[in-house]
View 1 (cartoon, rainbow, N blue to C red):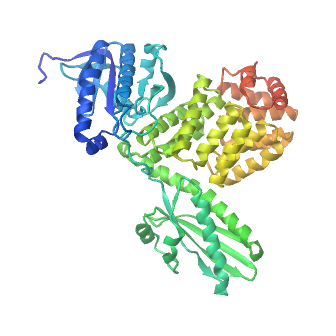
View 2 (view 1 turned 60 degrees about the vertical axis):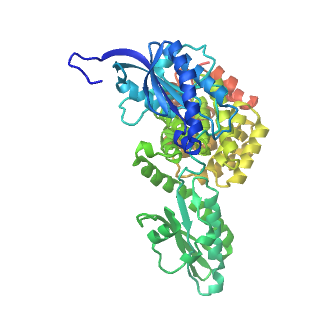
View 3 (view 1 turned 90 degrees about the vertical axis):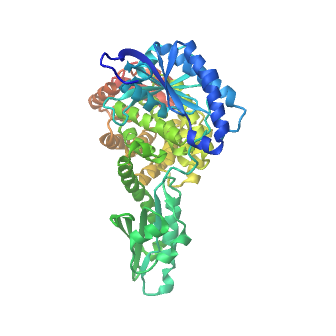
Length: 590
């Protein structure tokens, strides 16, 4: 209808509900007629009557979804919940790959209403928000949550403030999760679309007097491939595929094209008498740029130790370098082309900052990653870790819900990939930190380390659990291993904190202070480290400095109370008692 001079539009404050079918294109490709008929039946016999019954109106059909307008945010939420449950009930008997599922979102905004359509930023926000919803789930903006009431029979998860592309202000998101909402993918992208970075390790060049002694060069390469292969963020080309590239000159761009990899690692081995020098270079296969070069020196007698050391060094130095470059690559992508892998990468940095605004943004990115590809285990692992961190920081609005989400998400990650070391480690931390089930936790950490011996977080979290049970003798080597495996990681402050806590449990308070200070230099927002530092300072007689640390702690968590913390901390009673007394002397309130 053409716009007339008199104007047919008007403005109003309304609740905008946007709904979209999950994986519509794939469902139509596989079962076109059946999908279309069932979707039309759902829309016209169930969903539109429900919208009308709650005083709403469908104002736009989008082919695989619709936009509806409501005068009341509460009625919009009740209607969305009713529709999602109806769809799930009607579709549950069908095979998972044929079920229709919706994502829905509700925003409260001032919109422009015309006879057959609505316009405005509020409508665009609602459409964008539904991309953050789980299949069968609902996302609501904070303003909607404030009006919809609490007696709706659904679990609400506060995702924090999310900054969406092309929108200047962040939007607070709340996820409404129906207890029977599906966790398996419905019409989603197939497994393996995470687009992990790939790397090829080429045969090392040899400068050795006796060619028969070059066997150990192959041993170094094998160890390096094994070490990199245990890092879940890398796709490592098999040894057999790289044997043809052992010549004296290497064109890394040609190798990248031949093998389809983004990164190439190669090196050389020199022997002079009983001394060895092994050099390595990591290159970007797209540009030919050398990203990092290292030299490793030793003796023939140290050969096997040297091989292991190089494998560890390569793994711990390559992972951060690759992650940094991959993050830059992800940031250049248009949001519509983001994979779950890209989104998890982007969440990694704000998750490490630990200021509340950045921390909230990390959860939004992880939520988006889980909806883009519900088969990508690291998205669920990192989201579970986020909820555990949130409790530890003292920011949780409902500890029971955050604990439940940490368990649910890490459980999904393990189900998706039973050898995912991060998922196993986070689940173990959940068993330990939140449930005090230490034996089950230690088994999880051992499983995580067996799956990936180079998993820094598994070693670090095992050290944390050893602290909880008072086993300082085991905690220190675990924490030291975690730190040795991640010395350049932007989460290094956490490993340093656990090492400080390990020394505290051993009553080695000077070392505890030293490592807690190092952790604080890398990140001053980690509240558990501030508590460790304050208690250690009191133990060494530095009361005034300890009180300055607790003042910083109170600025981060103004509502912190010692007795509430003591009731939930998993530390054994003896350690907890002395810690509470020292923190009380440092000035933290009961």
